[in-house]
Structures are given as structure tokens and as C-alpha cells.
Image 1 (cartoon, rainbow, N blue to C red):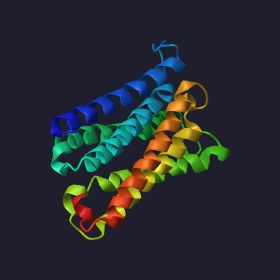
Image 2 (tube, helix red, strand yellow; image 1 turned 90 degrees about the vertical axis):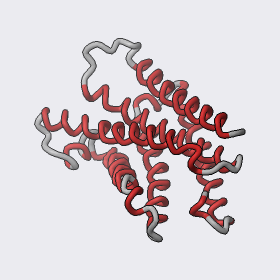
Image 3 (cartoon, helix red, strand yellow; image 1 turned 180 degrees about the vertical axis):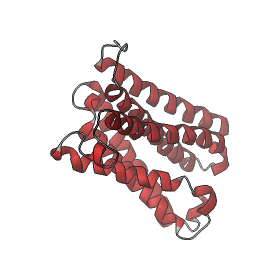
Image 4 (cartoon, rainbow, N blue to C red; image 1 turned 60 degrees about the vertical axis):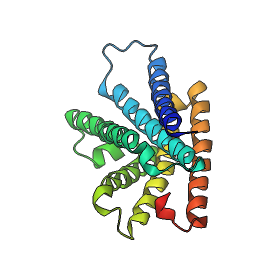
Length: 209
């Protein structure tokens, strides 16, 4: 795979993942989208955010496997990372705004109690993951620091947490074909993380990966 092919692959995987999330979400409502509430809309942003971040890992593994330099995907990561930031802020942000409008107060309390006591732990997982994702946004300032690898590890851990968060809470994931897709995402994400960390452990220059 050469530079141009990898870039095409990355964009195709990302587009397909986001489109799949949109189709799964719309299918739940039989595409009767008029009059949907914020409570029905906000999950879509979370699904799209995870789908894009999953595609990042797949593209990164492909790049490393074919021995291409990081800058090959710089434009792709910069653009899609900006999209992810908007999506991960919109997902809880819309919920918090609607909960406040409905008289349930401000976050984090209004969001933690959204689905009752049994689901609090799953919602907290999402909040922890969001904190890690937002910390990663400071990469341009701190990525040359020795301690930055801990932020990267936290971000990778956050991907696992948000996967569990969605699996437990996502209405689109409880039954049907999209649950199978989500299982595929989980298996390939786990494989990607294993590959990336194996490369880091065995490489003499892990920061260049």
C-alpha cells in the first residue's frame, strides 16, 4: 500500500463507519425524523464520534503495517479529529442542555441520574472517557513531554471505556444487525491496540510510530 492508497483507505473506512452509524440510528426510528427530541438525537453524535475514532485506529495500524511515515495521514487526522471534538462535545452537551431545560439541574448530576441508579456506572464511564479525550486535545502543546505517553495510554483506555458505555446504553446496540457491527468494532479495536502496543514495546523508537 502506498501513500495515496492509504489516504484513500482511511477516508473510505471513516466514511463507511460514520454512514453505518447514521443508518443504524435512523433505522430505529424508521427514518421518521420529523419531531424527534434531543433525547432521541444526542446518541447519534456519540455513535459517529466512536465510529470516527475507531477508524483512526484502523488507519494507524494500516500505516504502521505498511511502514509509512506519520505525516502521510496528517491532513486526515487533523480534519477528522476536529470532527470528533465537535461530536464528543455535542453528545453530552445536548443531553445536559435538555436535562437543564427539563428542570433536572446542571451536569454532572443531571446526566448521572438520567437513566436511574442501575445505569450510573455506565454513564460515569462515558464521563471519564470524555475527560481523557479532551486532555488529548492538548497534544500540540505537550506531546514532546516524556509524560505525554500516559495521556496517550489514557486515551486508548478511554476507547475501551466508551465502547462499554455505548454497548450498555446505546439503544441501537441492544438488538439487530448493528450490535454485530459493534462486536466487530470491539474485536478490531482490541486487535489494533494489541498491535500498536506490541510495536511500541518492541521498537527502539516508539515515539516515531
